[in-house]
Image 1 (cartoon, helix red, strand yellow):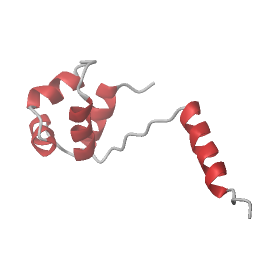
Image 2 (cartoon, one colour):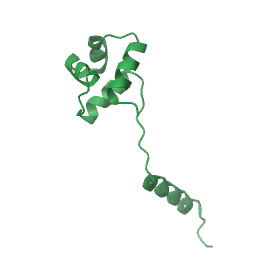
Image 3 (cartoon, helix red, strand yellow):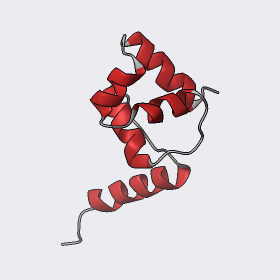
Image 4 (cartoon, helix red, strand yellow):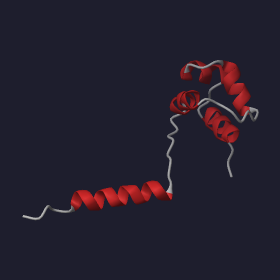
Length: 83
């Protein structure tokens, strides 16, 4: 399993950015980038979104319940009302 620190560090390096440059692009402090790349496990979601946006990384949430909801919603909207 890939960790958050590995994702951020690899994408930052592949983008040829320093920690300070990434921090500036993301609008966060450079210590935030340093801390995450060194294994800090807690981060605010809005901060993570800024960093991922700067690195062109998208976040996707999936769950069996959400998939079921989407399927059921499509079934309901696709049915025609009786005449």
